[in-house]
Length: 286
Image (cartoon, rainbow, N blue to C red):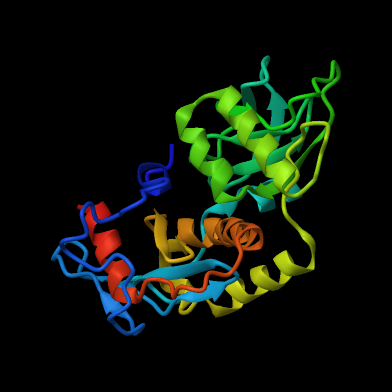
């Protein structure tokens, strides 16, 4: 299991992240978007950087000011590990499990919501994992995102990106039927996949949003997490713990946020400001 803290499951679909809104303006319309440090002694080294808005999604980088700006990345992403062959993926006997074997020298970081295509059917990872560099196979929990197919012969596996928040957030229920229903709703909304297989958002708009997010995330060597708003609501936050794990997970995380931006229309209301985002994260870390 990852030792980093990941918060989106605890914050999913919070209509009012501040309870009754007595402590802070949830919409953050009265403050500036300058960097804001978290207030408690425990989190005094964390700063919320300038937000980046693409489509209807705003991403606020969480920066650890004490982290080295040029730290060596010792953790490998799932995409890189599968592409290079460092991580071997095999069927584990049922549609709800897969087996991972790390034959490299560095741990592999896997985020909940990352999709693995192929095999007997496409699957999505249900929890955060860190696969150590050992030949001992590790069996992980997955959900099927291809309801209509179960092949008798396991094909090769390929990396399928990270799903958007609507699918990621339902994984915490650990309910395969709920995952299938969410996949069906997402596919229906974009008139895709009558076969029931999850179709990830792509195309020119996604590429544009993806490039903007990757280019504009400030001081990325010290970014250790992100807070994400959809429209004028703060929706979830992710904290990866160390810069190495953040570096390994950043590409998949940003790609997922870009998918969210594609499926959401730009909101006429302004997104929450940095002060509201800082208060949101402060409350969750407490």
